[in-house]
Each structure stands twice: as C-alpha cells, then as structure tokens.
Length: 551
Image: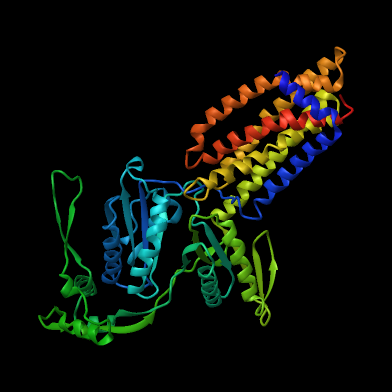
C-alpha cells in the first residue's frame, strides 16, 4: 500500500501528470461512446434465446388448397429430417399449433384455412447439442425458403423462435394507416419490396388477405321449391360431396357426451382434376336427390356455379383502416435495419408524396395529387426496445440527480457532489468496453441489452460508495493536520483494500450471470463496470479531489 500511496502522491504533485490522467479519461470516455455510432457495439432489447423448440409458419395465398399446402409441408419436413438434432416434427395443416408463448403473441391460434399450416420442431436438450436453436434457425431459414417457397407462387415461410422477452408480433412491424383500402394494399406491397432489399431483414410478409377469384354454389330456392326438394337435403348432399357430413351419433359409457359420426368421401371423390366452372357443373350433374314424388333430380338443376371475388378481412386499429407489414431481424439488432429501411422508404415515396416526420421514426405521407394522407407507424420489438432504453435512460438520469442532491445535502458542496457523480458516471466506459471485449470471443454478436443498462444503473451506488470513502477519509486526515495531497494519497491507499475486496466479490458473483443468454449483459456490465469504477475511484477521483478547493 505504501507503493500505491507513493504512486498517487506522485500524480498529485505534478500538474502535468494530473492533466494526463484527466485527458486519458476523457479520451477513453469519448472512444467508448463512439462505439455506438460506429457499430462496434450494437444495442438490442434482448439477445436470442436458445430453446428446445421452434415453429415454422407456412402461409400460401388465400384460396390455395389443402393439397398445395401439404406439398409445401412435405418439402419443409424433408429438409428438417436431415438434421440430427431434431427429435420430432409436428405438422398442423389448416390450423396453428396448440398455443405456446410465441403463438400467443403472434396469434397463431387464429390460423384457420386450407392455405395455412404450422410445423413445430422439437430439438434435443440444450446441453446435449453444440448448436443453439437460434443459430440453427439462422442456418435453415435460407435453405428452406429457397427450396420450398418457389413450389407455389407467393408462398411465405417464416421461422418463428420463442421470444426471449417482449411479447411482440415481430421484430419490426410497420402499421400503415389510410382510408383508401386499395391504395393501402399497393403501398404495403411497395414497402415490402423495400424491406426485402434491406440487409439483415428476413421473413417479410404483409398481414392482409389477397383478393382472389373463387367459385360459389348458389342455391335457386324457387327451383328447389318447384322440384319438390328440401333445402336442408340439398345442403347436406353438397357438404357430403365436397367436405363430409354428420350422419349419426354414438353413445359410449366412457364419454359424457354423444360422439358424432361423419361420412367423408375419399380424396379422389372429393377433389376435382381442374378447378373450373365446367368441372363443378359436371360434378353437380352427377349428384342427384329423390324428390317428394320419387323422381331423381340432379343438383345442377337447382344449384348454379358463379365466379366471384373473395371478401378480404378488413383490418382496423383505433377506428382506422390498417395494413401491417412484418419483418424479423436475423441475429442482429432491429434498430439498424429500421434506420436503413426508413431512409429508403422516404427516398422511394418523395416523388409522389409530401414526406414528413410525425413522431420519432414515424412518417406521414401526403399525396401530392389528391391530398390523401397515410400514416406509417413503426411498432414491434423495435418500439419496445426504444421505449425500454428511453425509460432506463430516464431512470439513470433520475439516479444521477438524486445522488447529486443527496451529496449536496451531505457535503454542502456542489464540487464534491459533482466528483461523486462524475466518478459514478465514468463506469460506463467499462460497461461499453466490456461488451466489445465479449463480442470478440463470442460466436454471435454480444449486444448491449436492457439488462446491461440495469447493471449500469446498479453500479451507481457502488461507484458512489467508493468516492465517498475517499472523500470522508481524506477530510478526516486534513482535519487532523495532514497536508491535502498527502491526505488524499493516504486515503486512496488505505481505502484501496476494501474497495478491491468489494469489487472482487461483485465480479465473482457476476461471473455466473455473464454466461446466461438473457442476463449476460447484466453480468458483463457489473464485471467490467466494477473494474472501471475501481480505476476511476482510485486514480481519477483523487485527481479531481486535489483540483477542488472544497477539500
């Protein structure tokens, strides 16, 4: 400790060395902050979470058949079966899987129809495989999409992982508001193309129904009445011919309810070789019912085939028509692709619209010809990220202000309070540099996350305590007649041991956190932030104490 006391004293007696310490501290702080705009350290809400399962959503254009959906499913499953780490695969054709966390936030339970399906993939245990689930998804996504999406035009295959944190529909969600439904669909298509050209964005899709042509079987009630047929019987025969029909019940002592029995025709009998009006009319001619007088009446006499347009679901929010475009960020923070996509959107629409910023990243588009206004609002995990970092930043500023006010009340000095505050704030150097250091040895990007900021805020009390120990002890020595520089040097040397022991306890306790996929940022912030806090407390704070006249 005598050597350390001599080292601190040598710093304080030479003005050049004190300026050098302050200059190096300033340079370290500036370089650490610059790691954000230079993208050396990336920010994200939460990193990827390795789990034992993930899902694959298959969405064909509206109006596609069960058989076409099954073709895509078979293609996906054939690729998944080659993976040794996959234990089993569940295919839910025409519906979503039983709800899990991802399904709750992405509304997979509402999936219904022949054109949709969900494939649930179950992996071996986390500790039994080397590859993490999000790395496997990252590797399989381009392979599956390249080989299977092209089988049916406009097919969308999305790889869905269990969310690590916020319950959001996707990493990026663009909500497009406007009154003209047709124009909304056109703009959504253009925005989708821009997102597809943006680096690191995957699984891009428009959450709206396509308008397609379909055939409708229309019952002529007047002809049914004249033919002496029952409308109910006609409907039942139509359901039997194309879907299936409930014909009876079965009673069982093991069931408290009657068990319905259905008659379903074979696939060959139900399906048509070609989806055409002529094929449907021919099938209706082959279906016959006996009327009240015993005559056989073909259904083609009372049912006509009409080609009609589908009725898409009208999406709205806050009583405004809306179309949502979703995209996922592929193992990167969603903030950076957002900024790139936003710039491209503004550039692409500025010739047709008056483009203006409405709120943070949101954009207002006003048509130059007819004055129609469209609002482009960013949502999803990106919005949660920005809100969380804003709130944590506010909590950090509040902590700084409260510490400063408490110190002013305690010391009756703004200078000493500022020293305590600055010593606490400079621990951010270690937090940022620590994430950069961990990123060098990590197989995937080590993000500065919300948990990292929580660790930084928790460091405020530790850093403040270190500065308080030095100031109080130095003031006690000065009151006893010791010189100012000698008192500061002796206080630093004497309090170094308890400061080191406290730091060692925090670092060792945080080591386990540093390996956790979710709370790793918290552990790294505590470890490297504590190291920085110790250096600042024992080197920078003494220099600041010597420069102030408050001691």
